[in-house]
Image 1: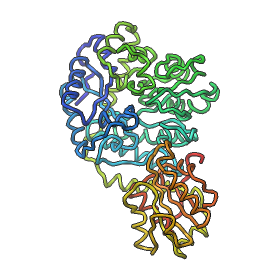
Image 2: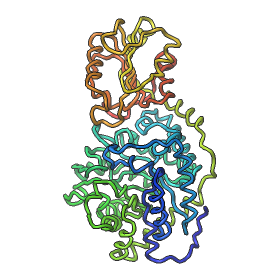
Image 3: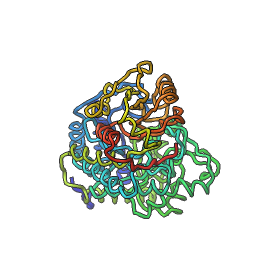
Image 4: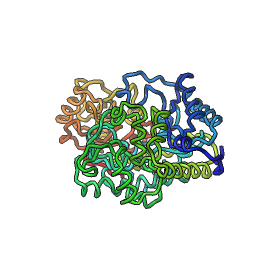
Length: 519
């Protein structure tokens, strides 16, 4: 669907409608789909942001409602995009949060590694990050999505961060922005727009902003030096958009705990005036409890977010009331400025859209293999005790909630060993542990139960233990490992990463990845 810059002269009300990007759920009822249709036809919304389902939304308190798996979600998404575009007067800008690919929202689609994995790549291998951005962009473009709400540009300096963590490229600000720009350039070269988030910086927080308001109590000087650095650097690259995070930084708002999304000081004064950003500013999802509970009157949150300086209002739950409240209170000048920015963004998306193509899962698999080999990190390594596993008998135990360990299956084709299910079955003096943390987030020790933690610690005190961790590297912090000589970080549980782990165990190559965070 082509963008026509000479679309009909639209009213002020319609211009405001163009600033709204409500949620559209791939797996939704016909009744809810009709509500989206009404937003398109009656309120002239500018775009949609797609999510898997209402039950999968992060504000569902980490999944109290059961998420229904639909293996046909990709086809359904493609159909919905075509349908919604067909009834729109002006082309809709279709967006999605696909930080690690469509698989973040859609079943049976390619999943690429998390940002923390990409952050482990050696500097000379950043081309692989570019390819991740490029391949994700190609996947999105093939079904009609123009705008990826990624990359994350937060520096994760807090290991207990409940919402960023693995989504960040690491804790070093220069490394983070270098990785983020590589990812962004890949997206752009695929014809898809990108978005740096979460301004002013969400990496040093202890509260999940989906559920409550994080407060970052740091000095203005520290914020300037750390949190703002990646965004300041990215602005020089003329980036498409910046997303504002739902977090309070009193040092930036005269001591008040105001969400950045609702702070004109942070958006207009700091981002626009001090940092000189000219592009589109998009709010984080307005359904998130850190802001959605602040204004019981429908439409008032949307007005406050717009007044603060957001051009795009993402996941507004009260579009009609929001449009009406903004029209009643906003100046014509601010409406016009935001409308022009969003219009320019849409022109950019439609004039540079990639030609449709089929999603290539094999290409993704090949890239993941390359990343696995380059990112594999020897957190602790002792050459003699490591090599002894190929010289003397060992037992192997898998920890985590997986039914099968392909890592062990592949090793068994080359080396004879005994797979055990509990500590009491150990007979050898060496134990190979494959740890698959059940959760990617730090809550409840990444899902690793206390019995398994005790098993790791007891074995390490009396045996030569080698651990491969197929998950968040921060999981090393939940068990004592002073007696363990070898801990290998794989970051992901993909089959491709387990395959590379096998090659490493068998001595095929040395680990060259660098840990992107401090453990």
